[in-house]
Image (cartoon, rainbow, N blue to C red; front, side, top):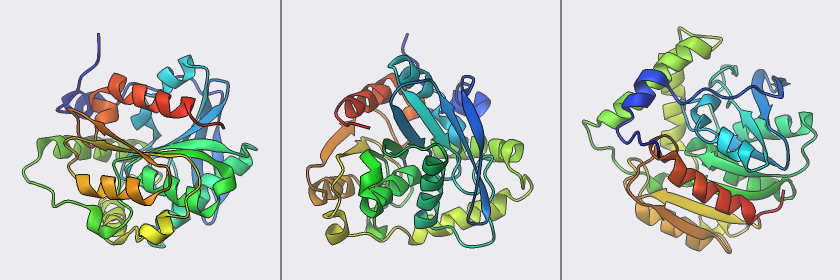
Length: 269
């Protein structure tokens, strides 16, 4: 039976399904932060990058599916998120992109495809621009690359509220600074309101295979922005996921996982 959690009531109550046992787990000390990572399964590697305010456990619906398809999955808690620490500097997507490279270097992972969700998608596309030799392809789900790509959020919004409630609980449980969620929330929010700032001429330089994935009911990203991204990136494909929102990996994982697997079959790690 296909799992549906369109209203995120299950996610708020229980979080995503627990991750399996990792084959490798550790920290990378990089640029005044400790970055948590883990590897699951065996086979060609894919790196999953979670969204803002969340953590790697939010991929609990995706990791078992990818393992069963014969892949190893690398998860990374972004700087200041989940189990990873941060210093007092403002957040930037570019800095978090260098953390991903540090993990890849530690794992001796020369090249891999990236699946990015929201802020993780932005990090993934920055890596494709900055270090194309390391990136086999980018699955870009639910994110903007310039400030004009975001929507005004319509309130009240119970789905966003439930997601935020889960993120708050998880931060208190996982973070090395469990009493600083409000500071964390404001710091990430500042980054999201003012970054990224990449435009058509920047995106035109991307050489890696890219698929832009937009949900029909995304609460944060304008549909026309997804179309603009697909037009700006050479050879990029655009996929619209029907019936879901910014939280598709949680709402209807079978739908989301099928699109991820199709992307991975078309890229070489």
